[in-house]
Image (cartoon, rainbow, N blue to C red; front, side, top):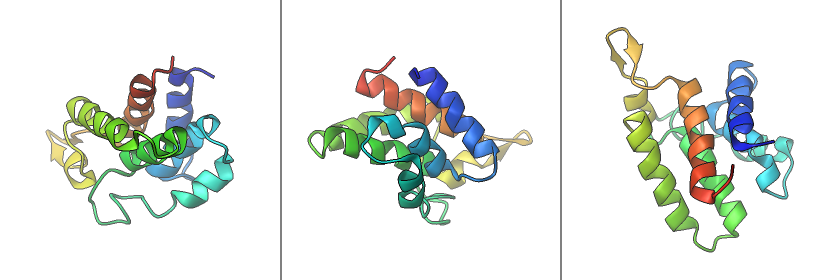
Length: 130
């Protein structure tokens, strides 16, 4: 599965109602790790609605950072997550869930589905995936 297909899988998982933003991203990127989708769903369960429902850092972004940590085995993770964060901010307009969900002209700055899609695509770009 290529990165665009993984991004669309993440969106479908989010839209299914059974996954939060962080879970959708980690499950869609499960092939990047030695863990199952189910294990990743459990690990990332508490990172919805901006880091445990605090409207802080976007859960999709946290999910991408978790997978980067697993993929790099902790070596170079900080650099990769920094790149993911910067690209996410450029593409989505913010890093915090509260800001991403802020309504402008009757719609959010970046809907959850787009945050999930972008987190997976940006992960792929930073990690050199196609």
